[in-house]
Amino acid sequence: MAKSDACRCIGILTSGGDCPGLNAAIRAITRVAAGYGIEVVGIRDGFRGLVERRAEPLRAADVSGILTRGGTILGTSRDKPNKMPMGKAGKMDMTAAAIQNYHYLHLDCLVCLGGNGTQKNAARLAREGNINVVTLPKTIDNDVAMTEVSFGFDTALAIATDAIDRLHSTADSHHRVMVVEVMGHKAGWLALSAGVAGGADVILIPEIPYDPDAVAATLKERARSGKRFSIVAVAEGAMSRDEAAAAKMSEEGKKGGKNDEQPPSTVVGSEMYVRATVGQRVAREVEQRIGFETRVASLGHLQRGGTPTAADRILASQLGARAMELIAAGKAGFMMAIQGGKYVPVPLEDVAGKLKLVPLDDPLLKTAREVDTCLGD
Ligand code: F6P
Image 1 (cartoon, rainbow, N blue to C red):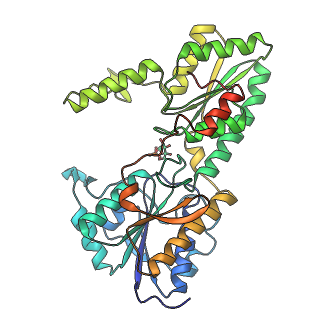
Image 2: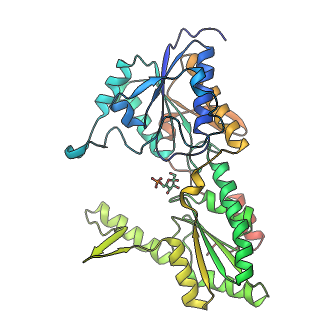
């Protein structure tokens, strides 16, 4: 590789929830950069590390052995440059400090590995600081716009599918309904994909508010046809039709200045009441309507931990390497995406602030219905 004249030094940070594949991307970027004679600076704990100038050189040798490791060797945080908790001072706009440190570290480009929040924060930083920023899409939720898939998703999908497979035998033995709660607040890609792969009988996703009566009727019909157990896969952001209507009203209220959002927990005297998760709510609805014994398994952060799958290692390595190639050529202001199986740069400004939800005409939804899966509607 010829030495790059356009770029001498880049910074890398990982921001938002971690996921498998981040280290594979860091490794690819660092090694490809080294091939171009470009220095790499690893920035700790996302945008907070940039604001607090916590950074150290990352050499090819430093990324040896990290390909298969989950998480991120750089650490991560959900802190945004423009609303950063700063101890007693509360949340402050630290954008200027972040930009100042970009220059202090002599960066020619900042590479941000993250999900939706990161895309938005990275685009804002590029715009306000007039600096070179490039991003890669990572998230187990697979909801970053303009890319077919984000790294982390395949690993989480394998974990969630394995969990559904395992729940089958215990559900069968006890003749129970097992509700399995999968991550995904706004987008149902993970619940839908794991539900189809694992053969869940009911799949509930945020994009399709569900009718508890329809869910109960499906489970009852299965029992009537001789099936003595059922599996319900539910995304953590799924809502019943009533809940979705209430959430919409509360959203409109907030826009009009009112805020009647339900707190996640309430303390009354010495007792703490925690709002039931969607899995618990679905289980209660089933038991109340048809009396079937029901249990809930919430997969939580298990879905984000551990070794990335081969597919995630390859995707993260490819996205990192192809992004670095363009950076070495002096390009910036893009997210490296995969579209139609090809690695393409897409304008960061077009990605920022957009969510890729499951479209109601998605082929996987159609397939789910065709194989008799209830989608709660
Ligand atoms: O952003 C990915 C995600 O895994 C979501 O699916 C989930 O709702 C959230 O992160 C959990 O975040 P945290 O790790 O901050 O609890």
